[in-house]
Image (cartoon, rainbow, N blue to C red):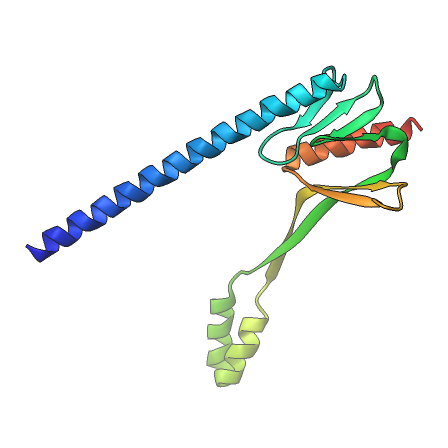
Length: 172
């Protein structure tokens, strides 16, 4: 009987937490949609309604307005001629795998005892794989008060913004 009550309590708690998480996600989605509408209204108010959206996916709003030569980040605009350079912000990680380390340790152990096992395991071939993840874009401005800005964006948006800024800088 006590076990049944315990199961009912845990199931009820699980359902409650699931419903609460669902409601929170729905609320956050609605708030984000409201922010997108407000951002679009801001763009229109200041004459940037022909701008090209780079990102609006739960990060910064990033738009380019080529006709006015402005980069818009959230509700702030930067003239193209104030942008000095940009770079991708990356994170490099490495993974090393050892192939046949157990077999080499066993053979080394047979030949040289415990010391041979240690030496044998260290002789196994290793492969190191490096992964580079794009985490955002760093933009440099010719403004002493705001010399640079790092935008944490998803990989696709980061690359799109970097490419667009690269083209803009090449046209200077």
